[in-house]
Length: 107
Image 1 (cartoon, rainbow, N blue to C red):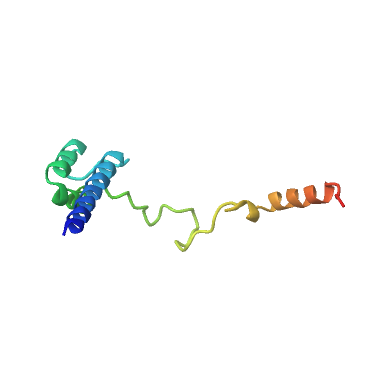
Image 2 (cartoon, rainbow, N blue to C red):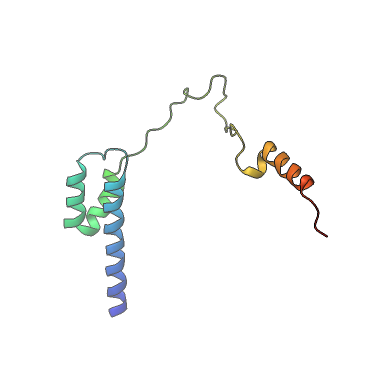
């Protein structure tokens, strides 16, 4: 029984901390109320306040408009503009190959 209470208390604490951190750390303004009001609601009414923050108050990031992509794009999946990782970069691979050829062999 004590373990259940400890678990519920820790879950409650995690929800409150996550909601307050998300509220104070967001880059977009929250919906409906100011950040101060949301923090007050989350702290005073812990479980319900956290659930309300994540369902109602949290700002949604703006969606890109359908026609705002690159000119001539079909709206399908975008290919990366450049190499994604060093091992995909042809210049990087050429440089490694050159270094390996130029190193003196130790035998």
